[in-house]
Image 1 (cartoon, rainbow, N blue to C red):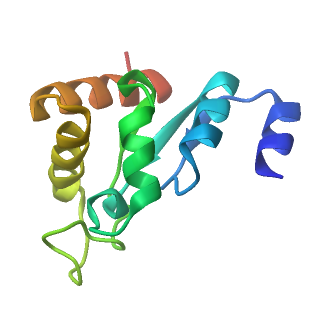
Image 2: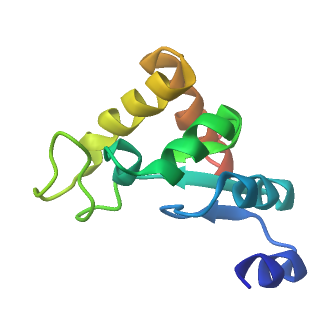
Length: 118
């Protein structure tokens, strides 16, 4: 349903704290959306966010904390904050076989683009 609404709206933006499938994420990307991953990608049994992190191109990903909720591993159960994005970047880097610095740079560049800060 969300896809159908967004397809008709002809907008671009961010799929905030994305929890859907990797196949659906690729469809949202074709509409002009970035896929934003949060703390759940670091959770041991979070299969879907890990698949999304693995299969979605890095140039279409953002990272977020969804502050103050969903603190990443190893901080689960605490109040989340923006500084914790490093754990999300680290997990995505591990899943993609990339350096943390590359994930941090590309996702930061993506944020600059989507928020038109360049």
